[in-house]
Image (cartoon, rainbow, N blue to C red; front, side, top):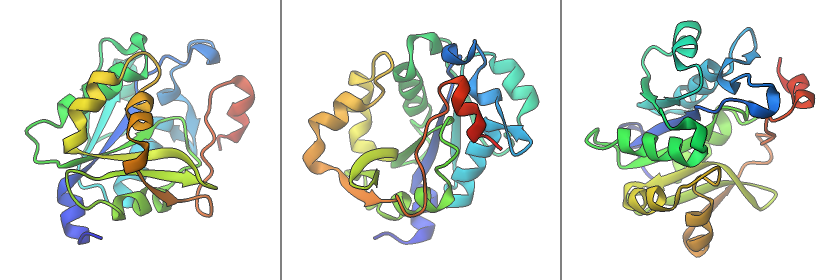
Length: 202
Protein backbone atom coordinates (compact mmCIF):
# COMPACT_ATOMS: atom_id res chain seq x y z
CA UNK A 1 0.00 0.00 0.00
CA UNK A 2 1.31 3.43 -0.96
CA UNK A 3 0.83 6.83 0.68
CA UNK A 4 -2.11 8.77 -0.84
CA UNK A 5 0.06 11.78 -1.66
CA UNK A 6 2.49 9.55 -3.54
CA UNK A 7 -0.38 7.95 -5.46
CA UNK A 8 -1.72 11.36 -6.49
CA UNK A 9 1.70 12.39 -7.78
CA UNK A 10 2.67 9.15 -9.49
CA UNK A 11 -0.55 7.55 -10.78
CA UNK A 12 -2.31 9.39 -13.62
CA UNK A 13 -5.87 8.79 -14.70
CA UNK A 14 -6.23 7.89 -18.39
CA UNK A 15 -9.76 8.13 -19.79
CA UNK A 16 -10.40 6.55 -23.19
CA UNK A 17 -13.22 8.54 -24.82
CA UNK A 18 -12.44 8.65 -28.54
CA UNK A 19 -14.92 6.19 -30.06
CA UNK A 20 -17.51 7.09 -32.64
CA UNK A 21 -20.42 5.10 -31.19
CA UNK A 22 -21.09 3.11 -34.35
CA UNK A 23 -23.66 0.89 -32.62
CA UNK A 24 -25.40 4.03 -31.38
CA UNK A 25 -25.98 5.44 -34.85
CA UNK A 26 -22.69 7.30 -34.93
CA UNK A 27 -23.20 9.20 -31.67
CA UNK A 28 -19.86 9.45 -29.84
CA UNK A 29 -20.25 8.08 -26.33
CA UNK A 30 -18.33 11.05 -24.97
CA UNK A 31 -21.28 13.28 -25.92
CA UNK A 32 -24.07 11.16 -24.45
CA UNK A 33 -25.86 12.96 -21.63
CA UNK A 34 -25.53 11.63 -18.08
CA UNK A 35 -26.82 13.57 -15.09
CA UNK A 36 -27.30 16.58 -17.32
CA UNK A 37 -23.74 16.75 -18.65
CA UNK A 38 -21.68 14.99 -21.34
CA UNK A 39 -20.65 11.48 -20.30
CA UNK A 40 -16.95 12.30 -20.79
CA UNK A 41 -17.21 15.09 -18.23
CA UNK A 42 -18.76 12.69 -15.71
CA UNK A 43 -16.03 10.09 -16.33
CA UNK A 44 -13.22 12.61 -15.94
CA UNK A 45 -14.80 13.78 -12.70
CA UNK A 46 -14.80 10.21 -11.40
CA UNK A 47 -11.03 9.99 -11.88
CA UNK A 48 -10.47 13.28 -10.04
CA UNK A 49 -12.84 12.33 -7.22
CA UNK A 50 -11.01 9.01 -6.79
CA UNK A 51 -7.70 10.77 -6.23
CA UNK A 52 -5.96 11.03 -9.59
CA UNK A 53 -3.90 14.21 -9.45
CA UNK A 54 -3.35 14.14 -13.22
CA UNK A 55 -6.07 13.17 -15.70
CA UNK A 56 -5.49 12.67 -19.44
CA UNK A 57 -8.57 12.35 -21.67
CA UNK A 58 -8.20 10.79 -25.12
CA UNK A 59 -10.66 12.23 -27.65
CA UNK A 60 -11.22 11.31 -31.29
CA UNK A 61 -14.66 11.32 -32.92
CA UNK A 62 -16.05 14.88 -33.06
CA UNK A 63 -13.27 15.95 -30.70
CA UNK A 64 -13.84 19.67 -31.32
CA UNK A 65 -17.50 19.38 -30.36
CA UNK A 66 -16.65 17.34 -27.27
CA UNK A 67 -14.13 20.01 -26.27
CA UNK A 68 -16.75 22.74 -26.62
CA UNK A 69 -19.54 20.98 -24.75
CA UNK A 70 -17.68 19.19 -21.95
CA UNK A 71 -16.04 20.92 -19.01
CA UNK A 72 -12.61 19.31 -18.93
CA UNK A 73 -10.58 22.06 -17.31
CA UNK A 74 -7.71 20.65 -15.30
CA UNK A 75 -7.46 17.67 -17.65
CA UNK A 76 -4.91 17.14 -20.40
CA UNK A 77 -6.85 16.54 -23.63
CA UNK A 78 -5.10 14.11 -25.98
CA UNK A 79 -6.19 14.00 -29.61
CA UNK A 80 -6.24 10.63 -31.35
CA UNK A 81 -6.50 11.12 -35.13
CA UNK A 82 -6.49 7.32 -35.55
CA UNK A 83 -9.52 6.76 -33.29
CA UNK A 84 -11.39 4.85 -36.03
CA UNK A 85 -8.80 2.05 -35.75
CA UNK A 86 -10.26 1.15 -32.36
CA UNK A 87 -9.53 1.38 -28.66
CA UNK A 88 -5.96 0.19 -29.08
CA UNK A 89 -4.97 3.39 -30.86
CA UNK A 90 -6.45 5.47 -28.03
CA UNK A 91 -4.59 3.46 -25.42
CA UNK A 92 -1.33 3.97 -27.31
CA UNK A 93 -1.98 7.71 -27.67
CA UNK A 94 -2.84 8.05 -24.00
CA UNK A 95 0.22 6.21 -22.76
CA UNK A 96 2.45 8.22 -25.11
CA UNK A 97 1.00 11.44 -23.68
CA UNK A 98 2.20 10.48 -20.20
CA UNK A 99 5.86 10.31 -21.24
CA UNK A 100 7.89 12.97 -19.46
CA UNK A 101 5.11 13.90 -17.02
CA UNK A 102 6.58 12.12 -14.01
CA UNK A 103 3.71 9.63 -13.95
CA UNK A 104 4.80 6.14 -12.93
CA UNK A 105 1.44 4.46 -13.46
CA UNK A 106 -1.63 4.90 -15.64
CA UNK A 107 -5.08 4.05 -14.34
CA UNK A 108 -7.20 3.37 -17.42
CA UNK A 109 -10.97 3.87 -17.47
CA UNK A 110 -13.55 3.78 -20.27
CA UNK A 111 -16.00 6.59 -20.97
CA UNK A 112 -18.96 4.21 -21.41
CA UNK A 113 -19.00 2.67 -17.92
CA UNK A 114 -20.90 5.18 -15.75
CA UNK A 115 -21.63 2.46 -13.20
CA UNK A 116 -17.95 2.45 -12.23
CA UNK A 117 -17.57 5.36 -9.83
CA UNK A 118 -14.93 6.87 -7.54
CA UNK A 119 -15.12 4.08 -4.95
CA UNK A 120 -13.97 1.38 -7.40
CA UNK A 121 -11.33 3.62 -8.97
CA UNK A 122 -9.96 4.54 -5.55
CA UNK A 123 -9.64 0.87 -4.58
CA UNK A 124 -7.58 0.11 -7.67
CA UNK A 125 -5.47 3.23 -7.12
CA UNK A 126 -4.80 2.21 -3.52
CA UNK A 127 -3.20 -1.03 -4.75
CA UNK A 128 -0.50 0.90 -6.65
CA UNK A 129 3.00 0.26 -5.33
CA UNK A 130 5.57 1.03 -8.01
CA UNK A 131 6.32 0.96 -11.74
CA UNK A 132 5.93 -2.82 -11.81
CA UNK A 133 2.33 -2.64 -10.52
CA UNK A 134 -0.34 -4.37 -12.59
CA UNK A 135 -3.75 -4.05 -10.95
CA UNK A 136 -7.28 -4.66 -12.16
CA UNK A 137 -10.74 -4.25 -10.74
CA UNK A 138 -12.64 -7.52 -10.51
CA UNK A 139 -16.37 -8.16 -10.40
CA UNK A 140 -17.20 -11.42 -8.62
CA UNK A 141 -13.70 -12.56 -9.51
CA UNK A 142 -13.88 -11.60 -13.19
CA UNK A 143 -11.35 -9.02 -14.37
CA UNK A 144 -12.75 -5.69 -15.60
CA UNK A 145 -12.05 -1.93 -15.52
CA UNK A 146 -10.39 0.14 -14.30
CA UNK A 147 -6.92 -1.29 -14.86
CA UNK A 148 -3.71 0.23 -13.52
CA UNK A 149 -0.47 -0.22 -15.48
CA UNK A 150 2.83 0.66 -13.84
CA UNK A 151 5.18 2.44 -16.26
CA UNK A 152 7.27 -0.71 -16.68
CA UNK A 153 4.33 -2.18 -18.61
CA UNK A 154 3.57 0.74 -20.93
CA UNK A 155 5.85 -0.25 -23.80
CA UNK A 156 4.54 -3.80 -23.82
CA UNK A 157 0.92 -2.63 -23.70
CA UNK A 158 1.51 -0.20 -26.58
CA UNK A 159 3.11 -2.92 -28.71
CA UNK A 160 0.12 -5.24 -28.34
CA UNK A 161 -2.74 -2.69 -28.31
CA UNK A 162 -4.38 -3.12 -31.71
CA UNK A 163 -7.91 -2.80 -33.00
CA UNK A 164 -10.60 -2.83 -30.33
CA UNK A 165 -8.76 -5.26 -28.08
CA UNK A 166 -7.00 -2.55 -26.09
CA UNK A 167 -4.75 -4.18 -23.51
CA UNK A 168 -6.53 -7.54 -23.60
CA UNK A 169 -3.64 -9.46 -25.19
CA UNK A 170 -1.08 -7.98 -22.80
CA UNK A 171 -3.21 -8.74 -19.76
CA UNK A 172 -3.82 -12.31 -20.93
CA UNK A 173 -0.07 -12.83 -21.31
CA UNK A 174 0.58 -11.45 -17.82
CA UNK A 175 -2.40 -12.96 -16.03
CA UNK A 176 -0.30 -14.40 -13.22
CA UNK A 177 1.09 -10.98 -12.32
CA UNK A 178 -2.21 -9.12 -12.10
CA UNK A 179 -3.42 -8.11 -8.66
CA UNK A 180 -7.23 -8.29 -8.63
CA UNK A 181 -9.17 -5.86 -6.46
CA UNK A 182 -12.78 -6.89 -5.89
CA UNK A 183 -15.22 -4.04 -6.66
CA UNK A 184 -18.59 -5.73 -7.23
CA UNK A 185 -19.91 -4.31 -3.95
CA UNK A 186 -19.30 -0.70 -5.05
CA UNK A 187 -19.65 -0.68 -8.87
CA UNK A 188 -21.52 -2.16 -11.81
CA UNK A 189 -19.30 -2.43 -14.91
CA UNK A 190 -21.99 -2.38 -17.61
CA UNK A 191 -21.16 -0.75 -20.97
CA UNK A 192 -23.24 1.73 -22.92
CA UNK A 193 -23.03 -0.02 -26.29
CA UNK A 194 -26.53 -0.17 -27.77
CA UNK A 195 -29.74 1.87 -27.92
CA UNK A 196 -31.17 -0.35 -25.19
CA UNK A 197 -28.26 0.53 -22.91
CA UNK A 198 -29.12 4.23 -23.05
CA UNK A 199 -31.82 3.69 -20.42
CA UNK A 200 -29.03 3.23 -17.90
CA UNK A 201 -28.01 6.87 -18.29
CA UNK A 202 -29.58 9.36 -15.91
